[in-house]
Image (cartoon, rainbow over the protein chains, first blue to last red):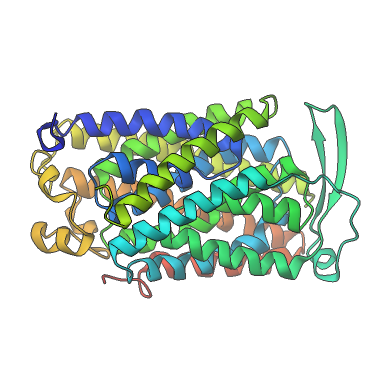
Length: 285
Length: 133
């Protein structure tokens, strides 16, 4: 069936179903979901990339807003850790959203494809580190970037603190910028930055990443709204789906085997990234 | 204020605001998709335009930019943009609730961070720096 011949109401239903599934997987994988949503919807649905990027940003915002309360209550998201990083990240995201509207569609599609494939490889190659016995640096100590986390799955209580705070701040400004350009939540980069660079425990990194996205994307979402790039028929079914899905994902987070989710996410991202790249290069429209 | 109390306060506000945002978005979308209000760009015609870049879409349909959607709340699509905007206000609302709690406990550094974050979010929401392109 030709895309043009499909009744309009099929698309919001399909968006809801896809977003619900992404919402569950995104929280389990510690990603915002935009990194799956933008390439999948950009490749398989008929909407222009401008609207998909706008929807992707609000999608990641809605999903992480919804996942926030259970993550905070479980101690998996640290407000003290999130507040300074979200501040620089939201400035970067705002600037990135403005920059994204200055780039051509083909260039954006190509860069998106390269980025998504690169992220999939990064997730595949990256290892988690639970080195919680680091010495806090002066800025980290001043900001009191530390806490205690009870891990019900492992049955242990972890006292943690972070280090390399300045590098962390710079990383989150850059991550916010890239996320703002492409309408991504950028959790793919948040988790390694928090865990590998700053030495936050993995589950605290995953939980805090979700809360970070909810703050960072709040600033860039307004750019897309003011530029007219939020199409309600695309955005609302997507956010309703992801808000329901991510609530379920947040509840499953403590007990789900992360490697299975990780492998699934990598395969989907490689396929979606290849599709975005081929569209950007005009090889497969 | 200890970390647990801070987290609980933020979580409580986030929970209520997000549930309200979810309910409002759902109602607004049912009104829109169910045709209870007219749409600024009729739903049946939307597939002809949604593959256009946003600047062309606005040229062809006359869809609102900036804060102009506030004047289109009688339309289903304008109403939904308002619901989406409410989601953009959830985080500022949570930070606004956190700020007096941090000040009351003389947690000056965290209070300064919360205030700066509010300034950034309000500046973004105002559209002064990111208005119509």
